[in-house]
Image 1 (tube, rainbow, N blue to C red):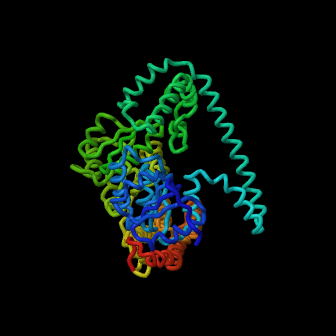
Image 2 (image 1 turned 120 degrees about the horizontal axis):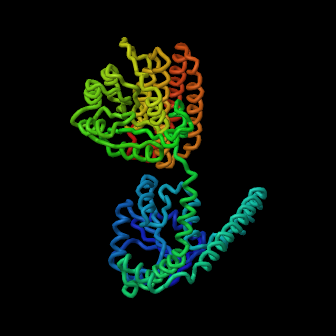
Image 3 (image 1 turned 90 degrees about the vertical axis):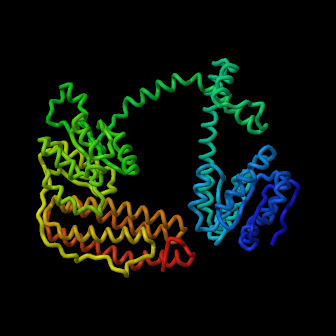
Length: 534
C-alpha cells in the first residue's frame, strides 16, 4: 500500500464508523497520491475536523440516514467556521436510492458505492472532479491507453475533448459579451437594495464566503436585467410558432367537416371534463391536457361531475369509476336519464374492469385502463369527439383461463410479481376477444401496461446495480418491437392471428421470466436486497 500524504490542511478527509468497510476505498484514494486523512467517527474531534478545512469530506456510516443526521448536526454546530468543501457519501449498494435523493436535493455533492466495491473507478473520478484535477491527469491516462493498444480510442477521446473545449470557450466568450453590453444599464445601488430586500438578508451579517457568492449573484442579476425586455420579446415571438396539438394530431383532424375558411376553423377548441379521485392520476392528466388545444376542467367527486356537466357543457367526459358520492356508472346513468348524450370514456382500474359490463348499457364510447399512456388517453378522447355515436357493445360469454400466471414465475419482488400477474390476465382476455374493436383496444392497453412494467423493472435493476441490466433491457426492446408489428397486423382482423399473438406473447414472457428474470432474482438475493424474498 502506498504511503498517504498528510498535512494540516489535507485535500480529503474521510470519517468512517467501521474500518473494514472503508479499507478498499482508502486503498483507491491512496493510489491518487493526494493529501488524505481517515478518522474513525468521534463527536469530540469534530472541532479539529473543522480546523483542517478539507476540500473534500467523505462520510461513511452503517446507513445513509445516520450519515445525513451526523452531517446536519455538524453543519449546525460549526456553521460559522466550516470552510467551503464538497461532501461525498460513501454507501453500500442497497442505499443507492436514498443517496441519490440526498444528492438530488443538494445536501451532498455526490456519492460512491464502496460496499461491495463494484464500481472500481467511480470514487476516483468523483474525487478528481471535485478537486478539479481531471485535466492534469488526462495525458497520463491517454498515454496508458496507447500503451495498451487502444490508440484509436485515445485519439477519439482526445479529439472529442478538443471539440468540447472549443465549444465551452465560445459559450464563455458569448456570456462575456452579453454582460459587457449591459454592464452600465442600471443604477447598481438601487438594484442591490431591492434584491437584498427580497432575499431578506443583510450581506454584512453573513459569513464572508456566502456573502461573496450572494454579491456575485446580485452583480450578475443587475447586468442581465437590462436585457430582460428583449428576452421577453424573443420568447413571445418564439412561442407564437409553438402551436399546441392533440397528441401530434392537429385540430384540423377534429374539425375536418367544417369549412376551413370559417372563423370556427380558426378558433375551434373542444372541452373535456375529467372526473378522477386520485391526486396522483389527476396530476398526470393535468400535465397531459395542459399541452393540448383542449379546454378542460378537473373534478374529484361524482356529484361535482354532474354539476360540471351542466355548467361546463363538455364535448366529452373522461370519467373514473371509483369516484366518491357517485361512481362513474351512476353518474353516466343519471346523465343519460336526463337525455344528455355527451360522449363518455371510462377510466378504470384493472381490478375493476368487470364493471365495464355494467357500464356499457349506458352508451359508453370507450374505456381506458389505469395507468394509460398519454397517446392512448388523447386518442380515445379524440375518437369520442369525432365519432360521438360510436359506442361499445358487449356480448356475455363463458371465458376459460388458458393463459395463467403460475407460482414458478415468482421472482420474489412483490411489485414485479403483481405486474406479471396482471399481464397474464390481460393476455387471457386478449385470447378470448372475438371482434376487431375489442382486440385492438385490449392489445393497446396491454402494450401500454407492458411498457410501464418494463420501465418499473429496469429502474429496479439500475437501483440494485444488477450487472446484466443492459442485456435485460435489450430483451424488453425485442418484445416492444413485436407488439408494434402485432398492432399493425390487427388492421386486417383475423381471430386466428389474434389467438396466435396472445400465445406468442405468453410464450415470450414465460421464457423471459424463467431464464432472465430469475438471474436478477438470484443476484438480488446474493446482495441481500430487502425487496426480494426467496
